[in-house]
Length: 336
Image (cartoon, rainbow, N blue to C red; front, top):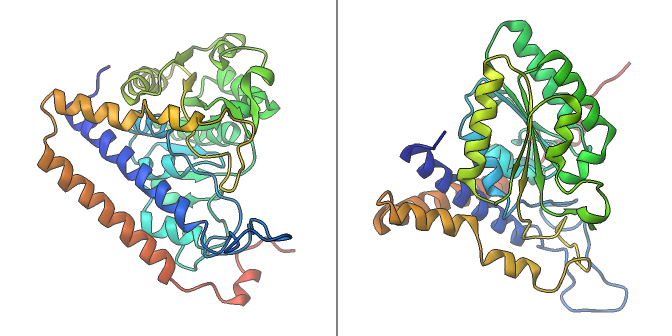
């Protein structure tokens, strides 16, 4: 299944949007967290600044999000992991409310209580969690609901290659295979589980081969390429909609930033991220579109201006929104 011209242009615009959003957050997040000068006893302050707490960014991993989400409808469910802004944007989660959530504001998706690792938007059927490996069981639940409702909806579980060593991953694969649930398991292999290389943490070179143990298809996408992801996901989604069960897809992708912002990245070879950027998937797709005559300079300029305007408005909305009232800490929680 090849993408149409409209799908190619959509994937390109969304990758540009995701990248600009993440690179903007990489700067905003550092506000107030670094001392004005290096002094003894002063260090990175994770609780300071307008966006306190951890922050995991996905620049470089855009092809996985857009290649899969280009196939989805509003009725399909997406469950992400702790690094999920790219999935949220590709699924259509509103930027303003998502950004306000990252700032901890009352106008956020969870009224500022979830933060960037716990984004929930029922209207687009998007959710994510900071629990490693949790997306598989949750996506199975959404897929089972679709089955019981007699719908052809699919559910997507996105996770990193480190999560493929969690018990929940294997339990979800087994359950999905036994019940032939309409769910896709999409593994982002960015080489590192936090600071540990996949080669020293995982017994197989590709997690796609693990699908054979559950009697389901396993597909490896070797390149960080949105078109290749689109083609692999398209076949798997069509299979799921036909009632033929789940598929496991692993995509080799690249993480340009550290595991979290403030990560010293001492485990990575020097200049690795800069080397990866030389083969940037956004640049590659843009070149393909221009060569095919699908995008000219004026159209690209207008698209990028529109993207920048949306992102600027989202960050302004997040900054200017009010914080929740203190008494809200006791609301929307479970109680006896």
